[in-house]
Amino acid sequence: MRRTLAVLMVAVTSMVALAFLVPLALIVRETAQSRAVAGAERQASALVPVLALTTSGDDLGLAMARTEAGRRGLLAVHVTGGATVGTSRAPAGQVAGAAARTRASTIELDGGYVLLRPVALDGDRGAVIEVFVPADDLNRGVLSSWAVLTGVAVVLVLGSVLVGDRLGARVVRASRRLGTAAAALGSGDLSERIHPDGPPELKAAANAFNTMANRVTHLLAAERELAADLSHRLRTPLTALKLSLDQLGPQAEPSRQALARLEGEVTAIISAARRPARAGQSSGRSFGRSCDAAEVLRERLAFWSALAEDQGRPWRLVGATLPVRAPVPAGELTAVVDALLGNVFRHTAEGTAFSVTLHEGRGVVGVLVADAGPGISDPEAALERGASGSGSTGLGLDIARRLAESTGGSLRLDRASLGGAQVQVWLRLEKLSKPALKDT
Image (cartoon, rainbow, N blue to C red; front, side, top):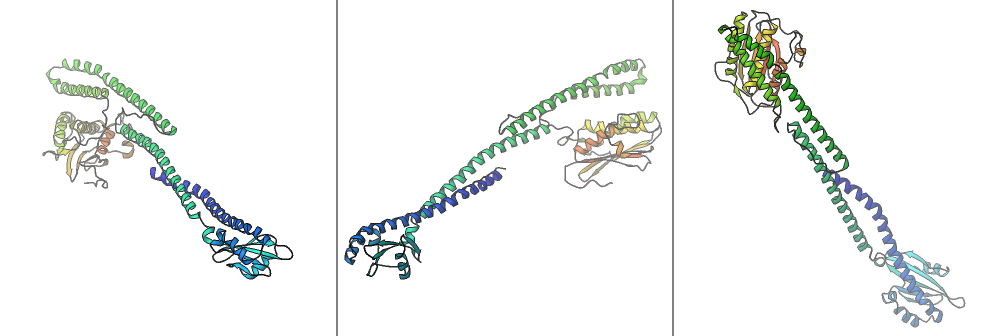
């Protein structure tokens, strides 16, 4: 932007300078020529009194020698009916024509101009004073004056460029601060603010940014408090459920363990909701943290297997014998697996088989959950956040999709070999600009 402003200032100032300097240069040249011609007229006028007294060649020669033009050999006197004194350059016809006129005239020759001044003498006699003005005299001082004008133009252009660059630097600095602050706010630094500086428009933009940042901070704080309050409300029914399970004896131990885990999840939600986002921490970005996907799947299938046996659901876990690194925290992967398996138990009839497959490919890890249920009639609608046609929250698939996309991967819905739906969660080990993953 500063370069653009500098170029603009050069163009504008140059046009303004040319608009003034070109006429001034022409005036300077015309002034120099007029000065030279006026000097020639003065020297010619100096000989008029001499001609009024005498037309003798010797006397005229002495008078001409006392003038600058005469000493330089640029002066001549033509006496009617007499000889010519001095060096004449004008054609004889021009001299004769000038004698018939009553005022001075100039004619242009190869080396300059000739001034012809007619003088009326007593009787019918007359004379013509010829003064030759060389081209050097006509242009004397013109080049130096043009050089001065050019220097003034250059100083004006450089000064305008300097002033424009300073103004542009001020605008650029304010714009960069605004862009940097917006990027910092977008990356999660809610404490970022701008000191208004620069032109009034950028000051207004900085004030608007600060107002927006304050509003966003307040809204996020209110949202965290609301999430924490809603999660805290679950403690009352959980406490009542725990007391009921305590009365059932040892046979309710698996349920008590599940309830304890649920209480831990609620506590974690409350803590996370009340914890302000740290600067530079963006939601959902998981690189730099990883877990053993195979261990997570084995743990979760061990938990869900008890419910699967109660409902008579055949199940199997494939590919989770050896450690497989996944580029997400264990807690986030656990939440996704629980959401997908919960959908299987919630949306398929008892006795419906399901399978979980862990796939490790080149730069990618996939978790595939398939079932033998009726499948998903409208996959696009199922991926919309909060959309569910079965009475649930509709957030399970969206949670899985956001986790996959946070690593550069994707979530896909397909028909399983078991006959029902297959949810594919692909996690990239590195964020690369590559085409979408091929089905495997």
